[in-house]
Image (tube, rainbow, N blue to C red; front, side, top):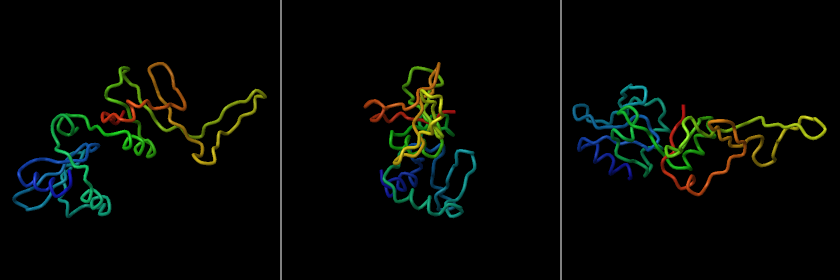
Length: 164
C-alpha cells in the first residue's frame, strides 16, 4: 500500500512496516507524530531520524503492509520478502533463506574472491568482466554449492527471510 493509506491506518491505531523490517511504525496520538519501533526495541519519533534520505525513501514507497505477530520480529513473527529484496540483501553481505526450504540451516550468501586450481595446479582467480569475482553460494546441510541457481519457485516466492 502507499504511505498515504499506511498513515491513515496508523492514525486508526494500526501498525505498519515494510515486509523485511523487524520493527514497525505507529501513530502516537499524544505527540501527533509517527513513532518508529525499531528492531532493537528502540522507539524513535520520526522527527528524530538520523537517516533522513532513507526515511523519506520509505515514505514515498508503495510497499507498506500491516505489521502483526506473524510478520514482525519484535512482535514475535518473522519478516519475509520477495526474491528481488533477497538479492539486494545478498549484495549487502547478508544471508537469506526461504521459509519454505526443508533443510534446517540452509541459506544462500554472496561468495567473493573465488579461485580454483587448473589441471597444471595453477591457482586461477575467477574474475569476470561483468560481475567481478562473485557468485551466489548455497550453504546446505552437508556442503556448499557455488554458483547456485534459483528455481522459478524461488524467484516468485514471497517467503524469503534473513538467516542467522
